[in-house]
Length: 466
Image (tube, rainbow, N blue to C red; front, side, top):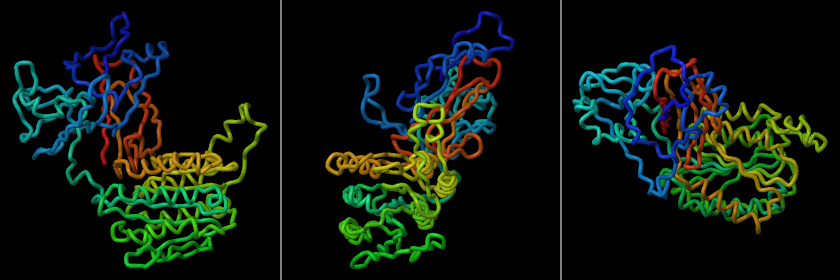
């Protein structure tokens, strides 16, 4: 909630609705923070003030530690009753402490769109002399700025899938000689005990150079079975049921694979990379379940779909044309990322470049799928190895929300003009987020949708469904 400030001295053209708001109810700043403490009451005043209006949203911010000198509180969990989750029938805003209750609690006015809504009989409670519900302090959603609802079945597109972790690993000569491959295998093995999902966790691997290598990790095998597909144009997936396996059932086979991975390619002299076909193969294996995909790349992709060309040009550095090489050059990665996002696959990318690698193009895959990008230039396992292994371990083992969507709503008279962060926008304002962690942060710009705000307060509500 924010109070419109910097009121113009002249009489407003329209009637300003006087809100009755308890300003002691606040959203912790670690979850949502506005760029300004006051909102200009008119669009012209906002334009002349030159003050950027927006918010930074961190929906799964940690609930431990301190904030403003006080211990952070756990987020209250609400189990909806027979009335379900109470929402505005017009704009679908969730019930919150700032709605206005009318007719002794039988109806409520939405603080986003001003729609009058009937209160379900199962949720009804009488009001006190100040117009507040008598059960206000017994219901976290009516007296706290942040709550978590246990969503009923109708909010699910499909039943929760087992957490899936798939690794796409470059095994070209650069990856082997730099020590990257050994560090990757070591870091993945160290994280196996702490991967979320416990007995439901699934895992799989693909490696690639100038061909794509699949690994059957079926439980009961004495050692992994490697299958190589060299035809990048007519790529197919052999034994698809054995490439993504339950970690608990195949733990011995997985560990044997990771122990032997560096030695398997120790004598590999192939300098090329077919990242695109490897990604397509990994997509085919994981598209039915979604999850987290980690990609490790050390050279410029040069074969098959997604092949990139060197376009580094020192002559344009420091000139207006420099921005061109900071933008993606191939739409293939963005188009592929949209497919991944629809299949609920998040891609985290780890780059280990010794030469130009066109990060701007390849990183579109992580940006659109709500993933992350990390680079380790001229990777040295003695210097950079501990840092990389620590970051990979944290990324794999942190608490993760899967198959999420996020929508931000704001009061009538205001609108959200831009979103910033790693996500794919469905429609106009729904953020598709295959994975969300405590490090996931999103930013919005807020502008006036009408010449003036018809209320003494502006409301912003962010909802994450996962």
